[in-house]
Image 1 (cartoon, rainbow over the protein chains, first blue to last red):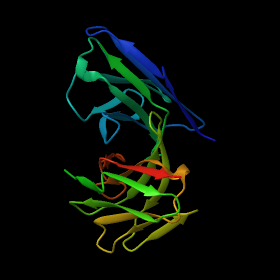
Image 2: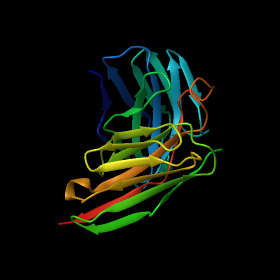
Image 3: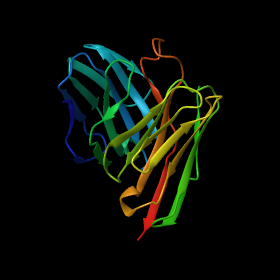
Length: 111
Length: 116
C-alpha cells in the first residue's frame, strides 16, 4: 500500500532563516505531487505541483520554491522566511490525475 | 478560474442529528472530491463524484452531485462525535486528460462540531 510522509511535523523558525520541508511517498512510482498551504485551518491554496523528476510548476508567485530530486521526493524551500509564510503545509500525491492523498502536514511558525 | 463556495462555514449539532453541507461551483465540476480533516492533521479522502446525478455512500455519509454538475452535498445521518472535524470539497476544473494535471481547487471548509 502507498504511504506519504512529511518531515518535520512542526517547525519554528525566525524571520529571514532558510526553510526545507520534505515529502516522500512510498509504494508507488511516478506519482503527481502537490504542495499546498492551509492558513487559519481552512481552505487549501495550491503552491506547486510536479508530474515528474525535475518538473515543477508554480501556481502562486511568492517567497517559496519546490524541487523534485527523486521520483518520490518533493521538497519545499525558501531562502529567507517571511512572517506571512507561517501556516500548515500539506503534501499530496496522486496516481496521475486521480484522487489526491494527503500527508500529515507540517506546521510552520515564523517568528 | 474555478471557485468553490461551501455552506455553512460552521455547524454545531447534537449527537444523533442529521446534517447537510453544500459545495457550489461557479463552473462545471469534472470531479468533485470530499475530504475530512481533524485539526492539525492531513486530509482524509471520503468520496469522489464525477457524473451528474451520482450519489455515493460510506457508512453514514452520503454525497451527491447534481445533474448540472455545479453543486454537491454531503449528508451525515445520525451524527456522532467521531464525525466532528473540517469537511472540504475539492474540484477539478476540466476533464481528466487535460492540461490541469489533476490540480484541484478547494472550498474554504465547513467546521462541524457534534455535541454528545
